[in-house]
Structures are given as structure tokens and as C-alpha cells.
Image 1 (tube, rainbow, N blue to C red):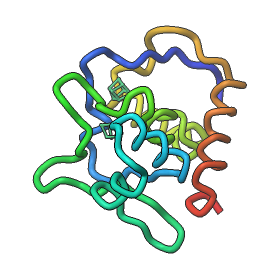
Image 2 (tube, helix red, strand yellow):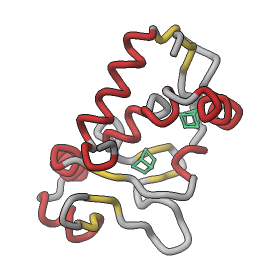
Image 3 (cartoon, protein in one colour):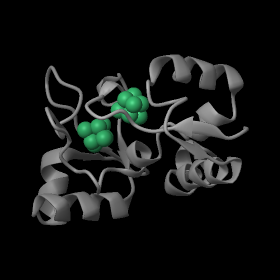
Image 4 (cartoon, rainbow, N blue to C red):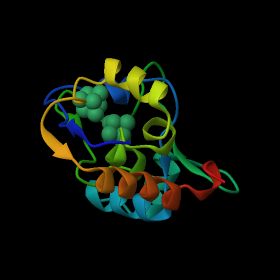
Length: 136
Ligand code: SF4
Ligand code: SF4
């Protein structure tokens, strides 16, 4: 993909409120727990659903994410990898139609600083590294 302008819009939380799950790496879990002053075990038992190959945030009833507050993400700057790397996910940046749909949805795409093709590739590769089971 060619370069693109992108800057997350202050106060926007549209992508946090979409259906779907937030997956974590083991490192994400440690960082998020530390951010909240919890032990990893306490964080996991309250907020994480673990399967054989994945970790994902549990969802509160009637809301999209435990960490979405009026002021944005309570885990920032230690939010999970997929949240940090959005919108530069492989399935978006490698599919022009998917990217166009995302650009219509996310007001941060097309504004702000220039993100080079190399940076975009690096972020997409970061997603593949973080979630190998999702991209095999
Ligand atoms: S939808 Fe785009 S602009 Fe809005 S919070 Fe998500 S990344 Fe930022
Ligand atoms: S963890 Fe933070 S950035 Fe990710 S969906 Fe929840 S509130 Fe949004």
C-alpha cells in the first residue's frame, strides 16, 4: 500500500465500540495489569478469557470494553497490540476495498502526519508477529 496520512482524532472512540474482540499477547497482559496496578493473575481473572491459543478481553454486559472511558482508553499507552496498531492491520492494508471501507469509517485516516509505506508494512508485520494464530 502507498503511504497515507493518519492521526487518531481526539475524543473519537469509534473503533473501540465496534463489534468483535480485543486479543492480547502475553506481554499485553503484563503491561495492562501493571498499568492498572494489578497482578497479572488478578488482571487475567477479571478481564481476560484464555483459550488454548488466544487471550482476549472479556466484554462487559451492554458495553464494548471494560477500559473505554469518557476520556478514552484507561490502558493507554499500554493498550493491547491490536488497538495500538489499528488501522494498520494486514487484512485492511493489504486489501484496497477493505481499506476504503475503513477510511470511510475512521475519521483519523486521511489527516495528520504522513505514514510511509515502510511504516505501514512494519505495523502490519507487528500484527502478524503478535497474533500468529490469526494470520497463519
Ligand atoms: S476510529 Fe480512527 S480516529 Fe477514531 S479512535 Fe479509532 S483510530 Fe482513532
Ligand atoms: S482496550 Fe482500550 S483501545 Fe482497546 S478497545 Fe478497549 S478501550 Fe479501546
